[in-house]
Length: 118
Image 1 (cartoon, rainbow, N blue to C red):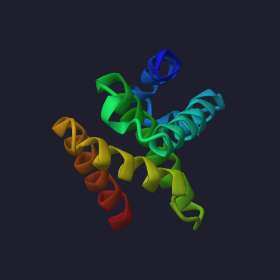
Image 2 (cartoon, one colour):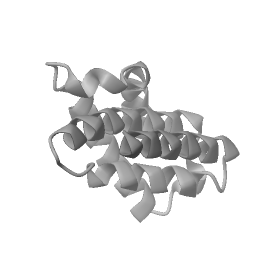
Image 3 (tube, one colour):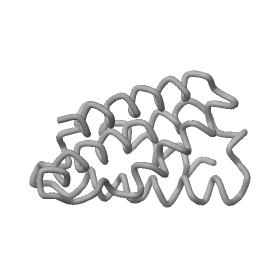
Image 4 (cartoon, rainbow, N blue to C red):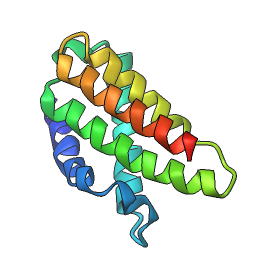
């Protein structure tokens, strides 16, 4: 669990940078990919009930980065990354234990819908 919190803490800095996906630094996307892998491991080990706010906030932050990437992809005629939908579903699942995670998922879904309407 300590590793989970370490990765989540490192990813938290992504929360203020949904546009970081378009920056020249690959770090936000690399950290997001790591968090997607970590989330898959948490789900496959049935550890979802043991995660706390640091985990799902990092998932939210990573999803925001992917949302920024999805907006860039849309301009180029590409589809949003599948990892975005995976992180959204992870937030919904965590929302069974932490209601604020459901709110994060709704915010992301609204942002996705706004992006599709543009």
